[in-house]
Length: 63
Image (cartoon, rainbow, N blue to C red; front, side, top):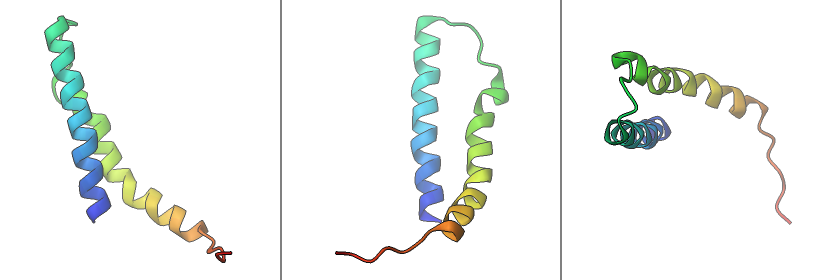
């Protein structure tokens, strides 16, 4: 759950900064809610991806 929150904060801050830069430069409209779709899909897919990686994780013995 903490990773999910951290992912949301980092991606959200990145996309917000990107949106601000696009507005300052005058790159046109961003498409409204469609602009935030990658953030929402990343948050939805992350738990599945994390579980899948955890399933294939192999513990290694430290030297």
